[in-house]
Image 1 (cartoon, protein in one colour):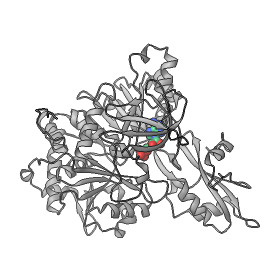
Image 2 (cartoon, protein in one colour; image 1 turned 60 degrees about the vertical axis):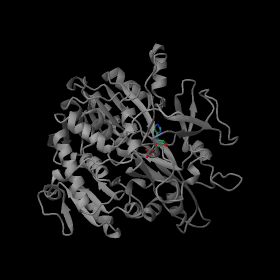
Image 3 (tube, protein in one colour; image 1 turned 120 degrees about the horizontal axis):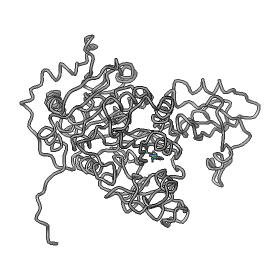
Image 4 (cartoon, helix red, strand yellow; image 1 turned 30 degrees about the vertical axis):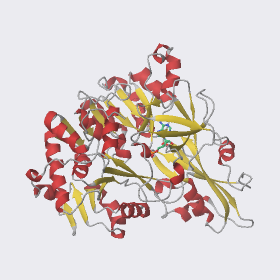
Length: 544
Ligand code: AMP
């Protein structure tokens, strides 16, 4: 091989932070605080505080590769951690505060988080699990009014004691781990995807490409998707790389606050799950003349399928372009984006809409294929034949963190099996038709059918229980429990609901129970969920 004569330049977060410091010091970062007032500062302030955090973490004894957990909404302190932790050599582990306390303690222990950075608004969540963990230091953001509880440290005091001059931009190998996100499994415990500096750097560059989200310095970006959901789809990293203004919504994700943020800060690009943007559309529809969202060029919707009607309504009634995207925790997360090519833009509007409603075609360096589950052959790209989507690329996981579990999710030739059942058309656009994973996705959060089924079947009156996802206007999907009672036994909806309470996060509890004679099964005795879903097609929850 004749090697190219190119510098062996490493793609890392320290380089991204140094670039932001050198070039974008003037650019603004705005946060909606808990009291709804606006906190404003510049990239210069952000970089200085991220460096101080890196110095402070070193002082706390965080060594290269050690994990630092965060439990926080989208705010400037969280952004400081996004960079401060990885540039210190540590690994940023973003934790989803909506999980059940058992999962929270499991994740923190499995990740071996040495330090937790916690927002003052999430003290109750912290208290529900942290005594079950081996965390060495708990640091609290924004707890200025009271002294922080005993044994914990104030973030502001920690930064005040750190000397920025002690910081020197490190040179890391790009393969070093930078961030860790856990994803809920169907069975078993959540599993971690461990991202490298290189994966994050390349994913950030991809987000800036014209054919994807075209992020640039002149943008103002509002990620409504939480920073604990796959790094807010990589937007805080990508925005910092290109020097875009960042608008952090804090915990205020209601339609009114989102619209206020969009309008006031002249947001150009926003991103989130359908559950957030459906009420935003309703609020805009109520008084369209009172809102000016003319600055908004793109609304990225993903995490669950963006309904075609929603995409159409935003465009026709408010002139807003919705871009549908698909991704996964195991993919850092973006895999496909539904931006139309020159060829497709020549189609009539209604046909264009059909493509916009698909999940899109693969972004550069992501390769896709779909495999027929019965024949094991790859399906043709004919827009009809369905198969399980497999992917590979420079920001796709190669295995899970610190576990043998999940090895079956990777093919022998190293592709990742997504568990999404798709058809692919001749243009490479995927259409997600079903899910092989036994999970319900409610408001962007996973609920494991299998865990609910096992808990229900532990009830003395229950012979069989299957939990299926029912489409829901507000939450995308909600769980329905289909139950067969043991002969001669009785149990009501209330009994079963009570039986589950406490063991699961509240939003996991089924919205309804249906009692039937028998659950359809395969020859090997497994529940035929597909048949059950067909049986309950069009099912309406009483109060939905
Ligand atoms: P997560 O790892 O929590 O980000 O979830 C990833 C999963 O969410 C995918 O495997 C899909 O099942 C689902 N998903 C993500 N984006 C979309 C989308 N645009 N349409 C339909 N399902 C989606």
